[in-house]
Image (cartoon, rainbow, N blue to C red):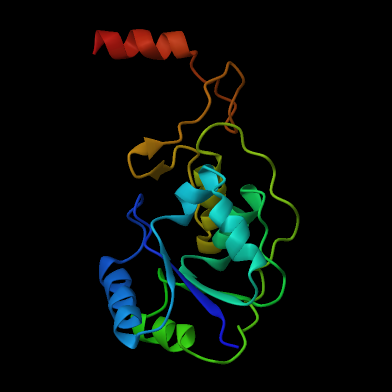
Length: 187
């Protein structure tokens, strides 16, 4: 039995190379195989879309999206963790369209994920409407080695850091929301 194919178009964030997304989608369509195209896994996770549970429960699957760890966390954050076996995530950020499509169309069992792709522990709950976006930003920071900001943007939605009177990592106090509003009004 061939694994199911899920293609993420990453519609609400400009993090995947457009030419890779277009070419993967074009080749999948031309191959005449059944696949599920989703607009954006991040957005689906933020909404806790029941389709994620269906994908997680339906057996072997290959997912063309972004970093494997980010995809694992998105499903977990939505309450629909992917199984430990039978899942292969192909990274449209780093792999070529040719390599991705070759793997998506393969009849072989999904390959084991690279070291570090699995969840080492359950993600910490993230409050707010865009919790999934913050989870992805954190996960991507782990994958790239760069620090991600809490104010990640997913399309027309922005996850802004919570304002508080507590100090940040540098010891500087965060401005109060009223102070920020007053400063913005003066500008």
